[in-house]
Length: 173
Image 1 (tube, rainbow, N blue to C red):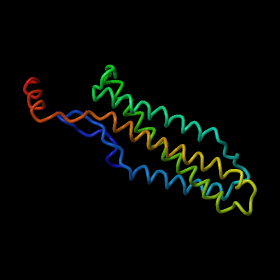
Image 2: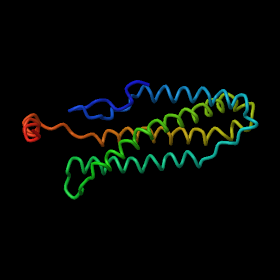
Image 3: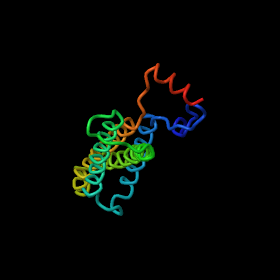
Image 4: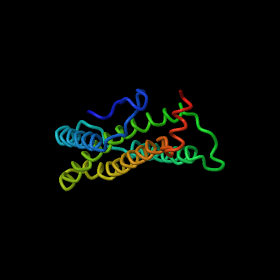
């Protein structure tokens, strides 16, 4: 996957690039295909889908959404927002990149199971039982992807106005 690793930034330093949405879509679709095939072939040997993982993904989405809001407030230096450790922001950015990919993979897995359950719902009782938790997991995973992308965006350093940027460059010399 190109475009996901560190790239030389200003002054030759490595910088993280934004997560390409295409990579997330490919990961989700690939996982959905594998999950659909596995459930179609081995549905009797695989455990039933439960609500726990989907609710956990939704909970992580809420936590990352709150972190995104708080980080944005601190980066924009809003009143009563407090200070921000740059290393902590870098860690949040890495968490956001990892969470968006993990959420896409889980969304694909739950989407594949939901597609299987929809296709077999009239024939198999297990398909009907797995449909609601699979859709819940899909929603939780998609919420995690969205929250992770918002958190990643919140961790970006805002561009400085031209006059401040030139003064900062001169003071570094």
